[in-house]
Image (spheres, rainbow over the protein chains, first blue to last red):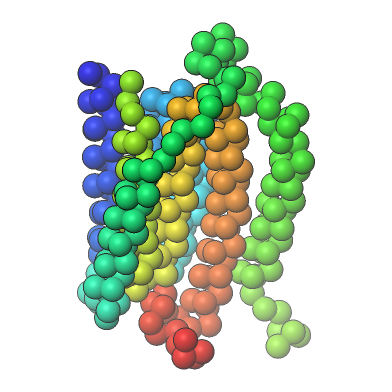
Length: 172
Length: 100
């Protein structure tokens, strides 16, 4: 019963906050609603026995990515945003396609059949801790993708610096 | 024990809200945040699948998605800053040189 109530609270809060994210006038409020939503998603991960991901969600999403968003919003100083119109001209089509996707996803989920269960039971996680299990699989089975992710992050750093830096006078 | 379907419905709803936000907002920063919303919806479904099927690969995929989202946020915000420097706007319907 408590599990259902927790899920209902978290799901309701996530839906409400994400609706606020896409509908508020002020981008700063939008970012702050998103921050609150990420905390609720971290709470949802805790109910799914994913403590490591809950911590990563708070640290990377709430701590790094949203601060980056907030910096850009404040840097661009969009004062007139509150006055101008928020939505594109044909916003009805956007809402209609989102609703169509939602209906399609719900209908497709009806025919979902779960495969055989794996070996990582909750008892094993309880005995060995979530982080240790993740680390063991990440550094053995997924070592190669892990290295590729490090390359992606390096490329992102280089790309962000070269895109956002001011052009030198000699280059123009 | 909460059924898997509930988590998947929540994920589908989040993804739909992300699609709507991406399509209807004029501000490119909010559109970008909608992309993050959609990535989070995928993360929620992956974690719930992993929990339900008692497999750790779902959580590892989420780990990779978070890393890619961080890279994407850095690149995307750099693009927004470059756009703002050239056009002094963050509204995508005012950036229409390509007549797309």
